[in-house]
Length: 309
Figure (tube, rainbow, N blue to C red):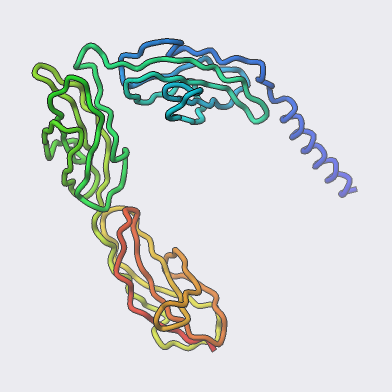
């Protein structure tokens, strides 16, 4: 009797699951209506806002942008899935084509395609500096950072500022070029650039940046102490390390079967303590090294060995 009840229960789940799939709306014949930019529109702003009407039954939308168009694409600048009905990005002055299609798990619409052009505003102050590198929120291990941006027509100079976490300007420079190398302080900062001519200036365009140039501290091995002998093949390795302020740090433990540390048998990203199972009848040499998100690394710990009987 119990077996029959369980069978009926699972059969019900299967039916419900199948119904969910069967009753998901087929949107194949729907058409996504574009709101902006419309066909042959001229956008006098580097920041372009894409928007469209939603489709009932759609769970996401695939948006693609090509330059100058998809038939003769020099670049596919965007190919992204969006759950809403708008998307914002920055584009340089040029001809573009964009298309949008609605999707769900079982069907999708044909793409709606539209061409448009981006031009610089006739008003110099309404133009925008497009930052190229470093990327927003990038983590750097070097304090010397090369900043790059695109040229703004009629600009005579560019003003660059570095701001601390409190948004206080800690450094300001000007250049006629579209790049400059500056020294950033440790920690979180932001940098911003605006274009200027003899009478006007654009708004600043900004990005954040994290600098962590400090190496993690050298790990100190604790146990098993070097020369330890044990019969158990599961070894509990422990070590300590003093944390350094900056990006997230982590440790890696390495096991070798020779004192020259060339025969690697185990490598793990781990926190102390770490249990590792080894093979009996061998001697293992172990070390630990620390790393951080910026790519810095510590000195290698001392080498300890353990003998497994």
